[in-house]
Image (tube, rainbow, N blue to C red):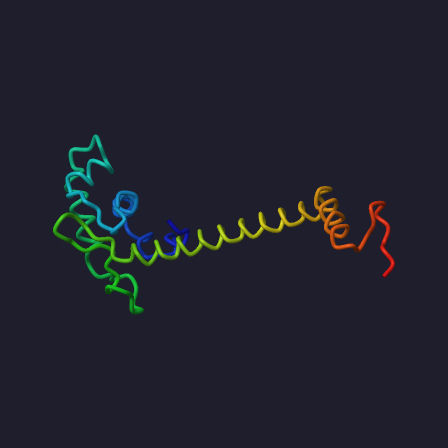
Amino acid sequence: MFSKIVDSSIWAEPDYICKVFITMLALKDADQVVRHNAYAIGLKCWPRDDKAEAKALDALKVLSSPDKKRIEPQPHEGRRIQKVVDGWLVLNGQVYEDMMRKINRRAYKTDKQSEYRANKLKLKSHPDTHTKFKVKQYEEGVIDHNGEQVQA
């Protein structure tokens, strides 16, 4: 989840709608579908509330309707979810998942580059590297057995 959710018009909705949406973000599968009905979502949000299903139904209605709070054009007219055969599709879920993958990939590459540079420094300063270099020079006839440069 990105921190910019608090800049979204979802944050201007009543708390129970935000809670349903965040619960759905946590429950969605890799294909961005929340495979739960209103009753199950309500139980996840309010396990001991007799009105859980009714609150969930109301939240699902708001989340699947166009966003009336913003006037600028939005993807899906500001709808956040859409009813599908086996649950609810989180409409911009893939967009945000792709952003997260990009961020994670960048962090992974940064870590790997740091490891590579650290290993490269270790190799340069490792005594065995110096010894191997001297052996190679000896084998090539650049230095003698005392490490002195051979005169050509």
